[in-house]
Structure formats: C-alpha cells, structure tokens
Amino acid sequence: MALDVHTAADFYATAQGAVAARLVRDRLAQLWPRMEGMAVLGLGYAPPYLRAWREAAQVTIAVTTAELGAARWPASAANLSCMAEEEALPFAGPSFDRVLLVHGLEASENTRRLLREIWRVMKDDGRLMVVAPNRRGMWAYAESTPFGHGTPYSPGQVGRLLAGSLFRVENRETALFLPPTAMRLILRSNRVWEGLGHRLIPQFAGVTITEAVKDVYSAIPTKPNASRRFVLAEVP
Image 1 (spheres, rainbow, N blue to C red):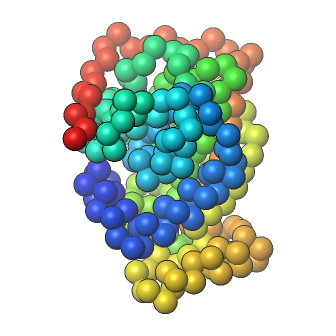
Image 2 (cartoon, rainbow, N blue to C red):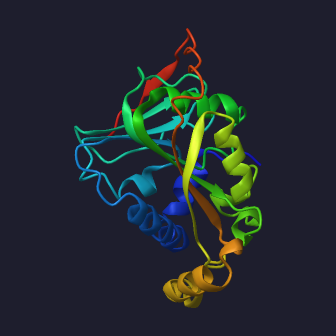
C-alpha cells in the first residue's frame, strides 16, 4: 500500500505518532547534536523530525514527492515545504550540509536515482541520515502507521544501497522498540521499552538509522535531469 502525505500527517497527529516521532527524533538529535548555521533538507515525510533542528539550522526544507503531495510546515522565513520529483530535486548542487531521508527510501520507485540525486545536492562534507523500517521489527508490518508501507530494509541492505550510490556508511543506529500500539499504558512506558530494546534486542528495532557521507573519490556524479518540475507550498 502506498503512503500519502495525509496518512502520515494524520498518524503523527495522534498520541502514538507523537511518541514514535519523539523516540526517533531523540536518537537523530544525539547523532547530529549541533546544526547551527547549516542548510538541512528533509526528504520523504520529514517535518516531525526536522523540528529537532528547526531553530538552530540556517534553513530547513521539507520535500515530499509529487505522488505524496505537499506537506504543511510551520511559518518561518527560514523554513519551506515543497513538492518535487524524487529523480529531479529542484536544487542546484551541492547545496545542503545535512540531508534526512525518512519515509522515503521504502516508498521510492527508483532508489538508486533518489540516492544519486541526494548525492548531487549534498555538499562534499555533508552527511546523510537514512531512517527506514527494519524488516525484522514489528513496525514494518503495522499498516496503520507510515512505517508499515512500502519495502522494509535490513541495515545491511541499506548499507549496500548507499555504497552502490557513492556513499560511505559511518554510523548505524536503531530506534523505536515500542510496540506499534495506541494503548495508553504502553505509550506511557515508552522510555522503558526503548531502554530495554537497545540493550537486549537491538536487531528487532522498529527502524534502522544509517548515517553516511559522500564518497567523493569513487566516481563523477551523474548530471541532473534537464526537466525539474516542482511546486512550492504556501504555508499559512
């Protein structure tokens, strides 16, 4: 089943979605603690996670594919939301210090081209963070959540995809050991689940988190597509 932006937005508006976003966002913030003055790009459905750096970053842009639709983003001169083709991002490269891909890899129709486009728009010293549903975790099979849509991945599969697109993996992490349920008792004990999961069953995390850098010496990047279709979304 394909994920759309409204389904994702509705999920993150619930208590379950808010807890899941916070658990993953906390792990991302630990990996990228200082973002002052940086240009940050979020691809897929990234607004619930980009807010960790919205105040510190110089500019924060959330991009969804044309199939997903445009996502709303809080009004700010330094933050934008736009819709674009995943194979033709509307940015001159290299432009971004950090790129976060979440709810994007598993839904992509052409993962190689998507990753090469990310490679193109990243600065040479930039970093990419890929958040993907873990194929061994429960969340990958919970269709009531955005993590249960598309193709789940193992950490090794994500690493091979990145290596094949001229990235070098530097860090691997996991998050979201909370069971995919809306039960209040479970949600209130989310910190306990997260702590025990990291120590006892890291292989069964809900999501895998992979940080990578550009392997600038591997090859010359592909040229951008001549056609660049995109829509800027007005933010109230």
